[in-house]
Image 1: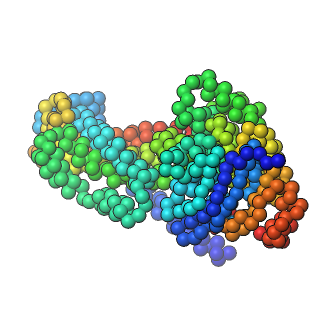
Image 2: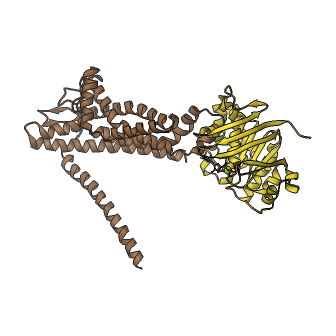
Length: 282
Length: 253
Ligand SMILES: Nc1ncnc2c1ncn2[C@@H]1O[C@H](COP(=O)(O)OP(=O)(O)O)[C@@H](O)[C@H]1O
Ligand SMILES: [Mg+2]
């Protein structure tokens, strides 16, 4: 009787915690929507800003964020996945590998503005890519690299040893086993890492501050060496600069809503793919 | 009259990082015969058969001395590729371990990784292997379903079919019925007897009756040592070693 009471109140507290989290999530969506929906229109989504960013739309910033995020994933995914495969499947287990893993985990803890400065020094200046989509993508790529590596590692480690052995026992080489059995089985987990990193890359401001983002561009970027507008920086700029705070705040909320929506959309797509993979692979 | 020796183990010692698992094993495995390996758990049965297809070398910090030869050739020679050995010496594991793929893909996998692309050939081979493993009737209409949807017994027969598709010469069974019901077990025993015509078979088993039913030769392992080896009939009716007798009659183990 008494035991049940303790257990029930325990569950109740857990439930309250979960509810609080949900409430915060709901509040975020609610407030951003209420304040942002007013400015959303077809024009807002398809046109560039006008009149010193007090009117018009945010199309270049949306496109810029998509480019930067895509670029970051394109750069970090192959690199991170290869790194995870090496660490999980090939490297001899031991001190060195633990050191590398520790390094990667620490990389994840580095503040993103530090990556921004690194990107400025290396990609913008040293390689001479300038303030551009390329520099920004590479910098963002480094920011999400640890996420991709650790998610991929976890996914690879979760593949049961028994099916690796099954593959090897059939005369498959190690590489064939990784390519045909291990990677497909780990794919849902790897996709989860990509989802997380897309959300991260799309929302980061500091890494692109000095490497890619422009306060305003006329028209759309023409090549990977163009500087771009990007949603998070656009929001930041709207809130801190300019002369018409009221109009700018409204646009900032509208932009936030779009950014939120964009990230949710990409996540949903990735979850959809993951689910399909799961169904196919049992 | 003994048939040809397919696999020969001579003075084999095997060490895990901290312990010696096999001590001076000398054992002949005859072609087209079923050799059963029995013994209490932890005596080194799995360790031994995993040497025969060079599976143990995947583990770090292990060491082997002595010689194991397949058709007279040392399988641990530098010039011998473990992948080639595994093509010739297939393995069915204790726990069914189908790939998380379709039934068809499970069987065709081994054919494909060995470089064969001919679609009709693969299809015929898949069907033939499933038939040989007595699974065809049950799965012919759902070859594209996930293999994980099959029952445990079906999964194990699938793993056997998968192994057969590769056309190896030897098949190692490591307690293949340990997780199966009696009916599935009977089916697999029948299968093993059938496969003897084309394959050399080594089966590890906990089950004394099973060893007596399916095998021609029996090896009794105890604490990493081979205690007795001989014709199954002789081992079960007139064991020479006291320890073998005790084990067979269930006095320990
Ligand atoms: N991967 C391993 N690392 C270290 N020791 C092992 C490993 N696998 C098995 N052993 C040890 O080797 C001995 C033999 O094990 P095993 O061959 O699995 O026995 P069996 O198959 O006869 O039950 C046991 O003492 C076991 O603890
Ligand atoms: Mg065993």
